[in-house]
Length: 231
Image 1 (cartoon, rainbow, N blue to C red):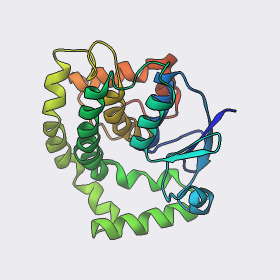
Image 2 (cartoon, one colour; image 1 turned 135 degrees about the horizontal axis):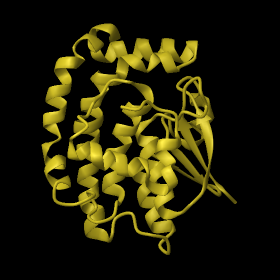
Image 3 (cartoon, rainbow, N blue to C red; image 1 turned 135 degrees about the vertical axis):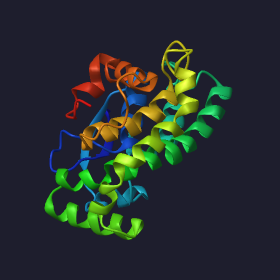
């Protein structure tokens, strides 16, 4: 039985854009495990409520639901031990757990004010209204005001990536010579930004930009084939 993956989309069901869902997409590709994509939207919470989740990704493997990208990665590692490892051992899993938090706070948290105002344009009317209201309440100001400050904010964001940048100057991937789940954690955020916004978050000459390009081409160009902006 094929696995199923609930993942966030907007008006275009072929344009998945959640950074967490992209972590899972890349992890599945790394493991060589196929999953049927089930498009899910912000206002469709009832569809995943039976799996005790209000957010995606949610992976269904037979009668086993697994919610949350980190939980899915660890599940795939343990359930499919004969497939390529996402972590390269328990030490790698432990370090990836820390990087999972760093990716949430620094990468996704830093990208959020840079691209959030561009997301409603990709959503159907009901989802756009929900998204705008909920995010403006979280931010305490209109999305247009958030957008107005991003030309200044991107400089600080790029600077915050120095630990990642310095690593990628000495090795091709965060995982070493080949990518692993540490790379997919970070890549999910950059793919999210690429899918929803034409705002340039990385300089072309940046080692992180070159790393992102390599991952766009990984697994037969899985991520590059998804609709997005050439930035």
